[in-house]
Amino acid sequence: MNTNKFQHKLMSSNFSKDDFKKLEIFFKTANEKTILTQGPKVVEFEKEWSKWLGVKYSTFVNSGSSANLLSISILKIIEPKKKEIIVPTHTWVSDIASIIQNNFKPIFVDMDFKNLGPDNDEIISKINSNTAAIFLSHIQGFNALSEKLLKIIKKKKIQLIEDVCESHGAKFKNKKLGSLGLISNFSFYYAHHMSTIEGGMICTNDRKIYELSRLLRSHSMVREIKDTKIRKHYEKKFKDLSPKFIFLHAGYNVRNNEIGAILGINQLKNLDSNNKLRTRNLKFFLNNLDKEKFITNFDINGSSNYAFPLILKKKSLKLRDNLEKLMKKNNIEFRRGGAGGGNQLRQPYLKSYTKGLNIRKFKNVEHMHFYGYYIGNFPILKTLKIKKICNILNSL
Image 1 (tube, one colour):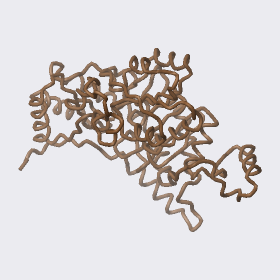
Image 2 (cartoon, helix red, strand yellow):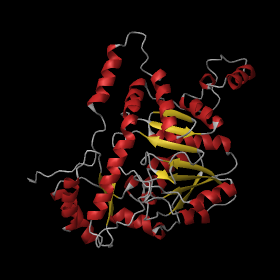
Image 3 (cartoon, one colour):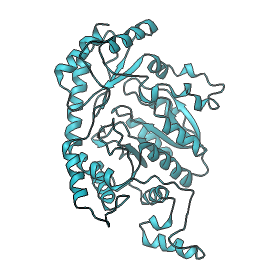
């Protein structure tokens, strides 16, 4: 039995007493006419989020994974001829799953140790005439974009979709991640920078993309189109159908609700200040970690990390097992493999896509898969506790 009283959890609740107070006020003033499903608070949250991010349009959905799915479904509509999407091997499952579900071919690239995101040079080398988009993941609060990549995709007119589900508020050259591509996705899951219980956001500066995201979010019903001229066009085109029930594409129901929006509006107020605390924590953690045993030379410029990356330098299964025993003994909760458990190419759902592919050639993500971890980083975390965590890890 482990009697060690020290404990460091992987996740900490983002919800505050003020969040619950806002919900209490909402319910106290509610009546039989009050809308709990998608309503005015959702619209308010979308506007506030767009303003914070620096984009024109945002669409609130029920998860980051749904945001991924809708983004690729939109891409299928606007890029019907091109069939390949370049995607990281170190990412969350729904990024790759959404590509497969929309009948695109995923083109995989290795990880870059400096930011845990996709290797930009490898992305550039795999762009061809059949490339519909680059689905780029910003992992654990690090920026994964380079000026070189942005210039190439602009020149070649390749669409960029940013997955920012783990990197709210992180920046590239003073611009928030999620404002640099055609579409971006965010997650408001419990463990991330802020939470709406479950939730996600699709963001864009393109009016057509915005209208498509609204359509696909709600069964692709034409009545969801905000532009009156476009909506009337479809109502006139399909005269044999009820204007309230014209389904333009094969859509989904991934709407969120007023409760999630109230939480989102309230938590957004503290996001920037909380991110500053997380960044302070990360710097202190990396400065106190043994640089002989662990990788610490990450590019933290503009980062907003919700987790501490912990990657062994040495490829040693014995050392790895000892590290896990050490963390378990000291009640330090961890996840091995980083985003999505490491190398997605090793997952069963990709078996038919990896046939004949040498997954070991993706050396960096393979190292992350077997020797990489992350542990929790919260705004309330004190430097004294971080120092103790580092002392424990350094004793390996």
